[in-house]
Amino acid sequence: MSDPMNVLAPEHRRLRIGDAWRDAASGATFAIEDPATGKTIAEVADADVVDGLAALEVASKAMAGWAATPPRKRSELLTATYRALTERSEEVARLITLEMGKPLAEARGEVAYGAEFFRWFAEEAVRVEGRYSSAPAGGYRILTVPKPVGPCVFVTPWNFPLAMGARKIAPALAAGCTTITKPAAQTPLTMLFLARIMEEVGVPPGVVNVVTTKRAGEVVSALLADSRTRKLSFTGSTEVGRVLLRQAADNVLRTSMELGGNAALIVCADADLDVALDGAMVAKMRNIGESCIAANRIYVEESVREEFTARFAARMGALSVGHGLDEGVDVGALIDEASVTKLDELVADAVDRGARVLVGGERPDGPGHFYPPTVLVDVPEDARMLEAEIFGPVAPILSFTSDDEVMAKANDTEYGLVGYIFTRDLQRALRFTEGLDTGMIGINRGLISDPSAPFGGVKQSGIGKEGSHEGILEYLDLTYAAIDLP
Ligand code: NAP
Image (cartoon, rainbow, N blue to C red):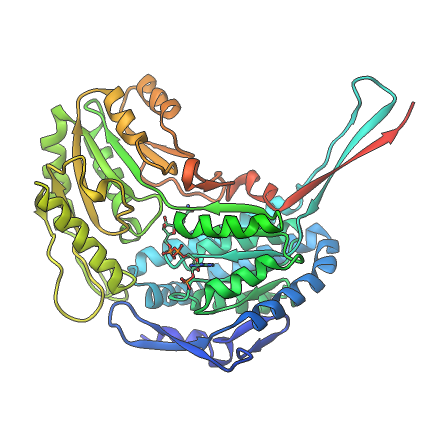
């Protein structure tokens, strides 16, 4: 197979600002590595504040023209992006795997998922509507006019290099906003490739800008401090989200925050155990466990705990670990050495406090950032992994005997992104749906992400929704006009 890097020519490994692909003003670059080998695969431009503000300048200048572009035309450009991504799915998937480490099958899934946001929001672009009504007391009419928010700044994480950007860029463009995306420094190549594809399909210059940098703090705070920016959408850790919310407050920006999670996955004794096992495997192992919606704590009702644990451990132990580009690999490399060390420490901490390792738990030697699928039981309440985001292929299994008890434990976290419940009892499922303090719930399903559904958390997991009809509302302001009509 050819080198996945061939799809992104060297001239496109630079900043995408307006109609140009350019070096950073300072000429600086930084290296991107393949996490499965630790080898450098590319150098990209390292923007500083001057470059960030240059992107904002073109995004603001392009705003009026893009907002005035007929919705049908904007919609067609989004559809063209969807088609191009779909036609070039294999190339995009290989690039994602190379820079991020996930197995190729997962990367293909991400391309399908990411592309679908463009199709979905192509359909939403032509359905933006206001309202006209009579004032209840009579004498005048009320008209509401949706308008694009303005130039948007997007900051995205490394775990879904395409989809996390697509979830923002597609609704923003549908609404008539221009964008500047700062992808994660570890995985900027896929976002540059997306910008190239969007240039090829004819998205006008200035509408999609991409600024790669190793100096996220400086560049993003300069963008947020500039009054031309009107919206921040961030996906990443709660810790960084809090910092950015504070910065966004100075200019009272619209914000969408997709932050961390600590999902409980609850298996009731009346569940179909085959369904629960499939769901638990997906919820834990999708994206190598490096997902905000990964099952962080698996609670199994005491009477089925033994059977569930044995079968789950067998499935985890059978997964193959290796380079994501190799055929048949289930579990690729983690993003970096810090992630491996973090997992190692979380497992050691749980074991020190009395947990038992059933599968995995040993960090392998050799190049690349690998950690094996790991299952722990007898994990005590005070183990750090029950409150931290594990963000890797490590599964603590716990037990419960009453619904009230497990609901209280599931909710005992600052996070509120997602919960999973496996039961055949409809009333029980609905009680959990009402009782769990989360923005999303999987009922007898481990996979919930869908561009046509509103994705987002409550509590410290975030603000706002991505995907669905709600997703475009995040990019629209509403002007209300009072019209005198006696
Ligand atoms: P992160 O460390 O918070 O980084 C996310 C992005 O923020 C990166 O682009 C990063 O740039 C940038 N950043 C870091 N510090 C910054 C600062 N001071 N100012 C401005 N930007 C800054 O998160 P991550 O490790 O990439 O991603 C994992 C986290 O994302 C997890 O917590 C996960 O739960 C969360 N996540 C949430 C969702 C959701 O939808 N709720 C989806 C996916 C992931 P650099 O790369 O240069 O550091």
